[in-house]
Each structure stands twice: as C-alpha cells, then as structure tokens.
Image (cartoon, rainbow, N blue to C red):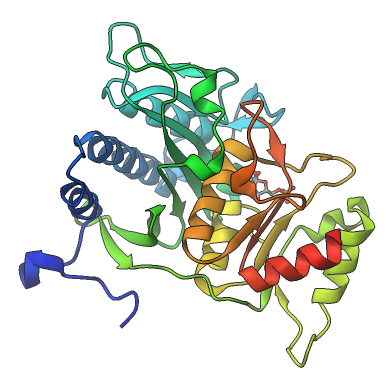
Length: 343
Ligand code: P6P
C-alpha cells in the first residue's frame, strides 16, 4: 500500500526505514560515491532536529518575536530565523563536504572558515520559511538545495558556485514543522517523506515515492493581493473559482508559509501561485533557495513549476537573492493557469 513505512532489508526488528539508512542505501548503490553526500545529509538532518526542537518549544524558550534586525530581503528577522540560520551554518561548515553556502538570511556567500576543508558540494537554504507564522503557532519550514561546485576543487567556493540553475540540483528537500515534523527530499528519482519520532530522535520513512496528482481541487494564492495582480492573473483566479468542465469549483487554502502550502499541494494536488504584482514586480519568492528546490521536488513527483515565462528549473540565476513569480503544483492545474493568465 502506498506510503506505508518500508521495513527494508533490516526486517521487522526495526520500526521502519530511517532517513540515515535511506541515504546510506543510496550511497551503496552508487559505486563512485565517496560518502560526502551521506555525511552532508546527516548534518542537514541534525540541523532539522535541532531547529525542530527549538520550534516546538518556541513559546517557552524566549525565541518568539523579532531580533530588531532587517535582513537583505528588507524583512524583520525573527529570533528563530537567526537561530535556524546559525544552526545550519554551524552544523555544516566544519564538515568538509561543502565549499560555500547561500542563505536567505545572509547577504553575501557564506565561506567555509579558514583552516577547514572545502568540499565538492554547494548548500543553499531558506533556514526558516514562513517566519510570520511562528508567533501564531502555524506551520513553518526549512528549504534546502544541493549542487556540485563548478569552480576548481580544493579552494573556497564562490558566487559562481551558488548561481546555478535548478536543473543542475543534485538534491533538494524541505522540513515542515507542523502537527508533526517531516523531512521530504529528492535526488531527482522519486520524492520521499520522513516523519520525525521525537521519542526516538529519528526521521522514519512514512511517505515513499510521493506523486503529485495530475490535477487537484485546491488553489493557493494570497487573495489579499487581488488588486495588485495583472489582469490575466485576476482572470485565472475568477475562472478557477467557477466550476469548469463539469468539475466542482476549487477550494481555496493559504497558510502563508510556502513549505506548508506546497506540502499540501505535493500530497493532494492543486496549485500554489505567487505571481508578480505591482509591489513585487519580479514576484516575492526567492529563486535559489525557495522556488528552485521546491520546483525540483515537485517535478520529481510528476508536477510542474513555472515562472509564467519559463520553467523554473531552467532559469539561470544572476543574483543570489533574486526573486521569481511561481506557478507550481499539479501539471494540469499549472497548464490551466499559464494558459489563462499568460497566453
Ligand atoms: P504573503 C513567507 O514569508 C513567504 O516567503 C512564503 O513562505 C509564503 O508563501 C509567502 O512569503 C507569503 O507571502 O505576501 O502572502 O504573506
């Protein structure tokens, strides 16, 4: 039955396939693997556990509220934004698997500290997506993507290593801190979800080979921006609200954290849209550490992701924090949106 925990070769003695085992099996199936990817993923998993632990008791550990700082995005930095960013950087930077990092919270490329080895991977992340939801205890998440470096090995990574298109992603994933914490990842051949068991301190396979339904029945967009949208987007939203081709009208869901809205879309189908508007002329979501990794995952699950003018994964970045409009989800729903909003 789909999505039932796989006991795997370990057999009934273990309660299920752990994330660590899943990544290790992948390494064993690749004769050229050195174990660097496994070690990097273990670090990301550890960071997810640490962040998840702090998120789950945010109201008790003095990390609610803001730091008073404004980040490169011009957004107020929540204390948990800082904590999540510092956790990811500190857990990864000494491991020797990464040559440079990029973070939503840091204006410049994050170098590996002097005296520590630079590896073959490039890690980019939104450490805490949807931080506006923290203080109201709604779902938030972490998004990450991994590329191979393109500059010569050995020395420090550069901006060139970060400015790579999504089609060259080696692996991408997200963590959703919600009613339960889950880590979902893909290396391009299938999308797999792991649910965190706090009693054990491990992520266990719970959603094997997730597939986005060809079409859903939910659309997700901030309707409060209606009057800022281009007429084509307004036309699509009015269209999707009315029953089409004998189908019932779509329901509307919007959590305000892309990870949560996209997790629902990944599992149940439908479409998430954050279009360009009069205020965000290039869209609001960031390409490198939000749209591209999520597009990689959704496409690996059989869905589609588009900017309105091109496939998200084909966009060649020119700036670390550049933004993009985003239409993502079930292939048929994305095609409808592009046909009505952009043709
Ligand atoms: P709005 C959160 O700030 C975020 O970056 C995404 O996670 C989310 O989908 C979007 O912005 C929400 O934006 O303008 O609707 O609050």
